[in-house]
Length: 72
Image 1: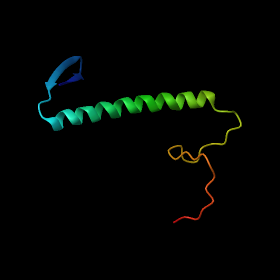
Image 2: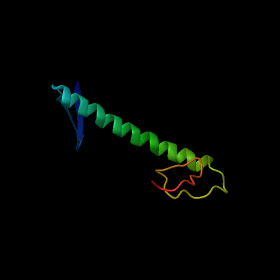
Image 3: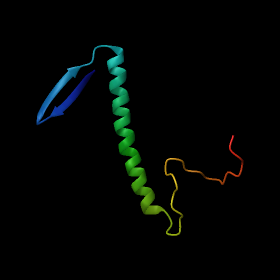
């Protein structure tokens, strides 16, 4: 497995030899792709949400139902 690094119009391929390096590269790519996907999901939500929808207090903690139980 190789990691491609693009800096100042130079492309460099670095071989990843150990399993930890390869796992780290997979995690880095996963994070990159998830950020891309969540950005697009947020844009789609902004397009399809109803006009009378209340503003989200904390968009990272979406709740489907009102929780009336006291805190633990």
